[in-house]
Image 1 (cartoon, helix red, strand yellow):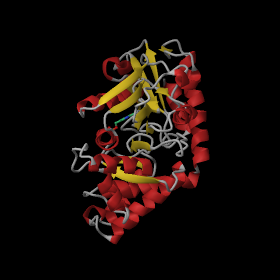
Image 2 (tube, helix red, strand yellow; image 1 turned 90 degrees about the vertical axis):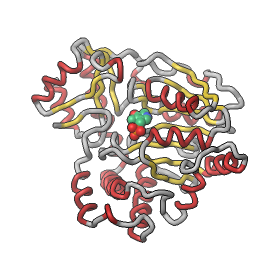
Image 3 (spheres, rainbow, N blue to C red; image 1 turned 120 degrees about the vertical axis):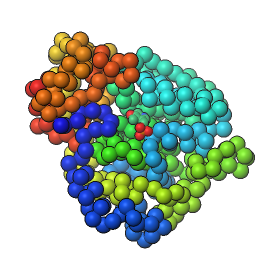
Image 4 (cartoon, protein in one colour; image 1 turned 180 degrees about the vertical axis):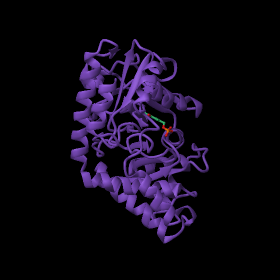
Length: 354
Ligand SMILES: *Cc1c(COP(=O)(O)O)cnc(C)c1O
């Protein structure tokens, strides 16, 4: 089966081999306080910096999931106020975590399937400590363009800018001089089994967290950035991490670097154009917005008149599987992933069957 699902997704072609190598090297038994582990962490860190153009002002930390990072963000970076651009279920959940951790989050929300119009004119309270974007909303298939996020930092230089890039990597092209905090997990665009979150934070985040810790505002034990930072100096982690996944991520990213990010982005755009014009031209399918710019390049979502389950019955027989809508939209929408694990030919075959 080829999984066009939006997460977990089709594994990257080299993923299984790298996991086999990891088992052959007995990485499941290797100590996270050993030189072997430190080398693995360092390698993955270096490869990610090349692929994503991450500068030395930013650290790369590992967690168990992106959901865990949402929670850590409120503990470490928010004294009281956060502001969230909400365009679907994931960005809404990020906002909800603010309430669940007893902060005072605010949001600007658009109906599912529509983008933010005139984003630069949306008023954000001056006292906002952190402004949160979900660059690619996996439930509604709506993105926020990278230059719009950077422009918000210019308008609010004193706020931290946070960007969820879970279903946007490796395609997304962030200017990290304008992004203080971003994060992803590996079971979407990186084409790996779930179980690893990646948290990219700069020094402004580290000092904010230290400040909150010293003031006694932070009531966290395990969830402290200072502990991550202390361990990072020797490429270690506060607790026993998912060593195998950190190893495999480094290897897959190395493979992606061999292909080159420019090529990966070009291929993503080529597959997007085919997929978009196919869906656009078929009367069974309907995007909720006419604004092509806000439609996700990596997770396409549209309404369907034929139930998603019926479509999948037909597709499954030919070896393909796509995602239904998120939550309530399960049968009324389809979601199709456009990640690097899928090449142009496979995408073409899917469209033929569809
Ligand atoms: C999947 C997803 C998450 C949650 O990721 P987990 O690894 O399941 O915790 C968060 N944000 C977005 C945009 C997602 O697509």
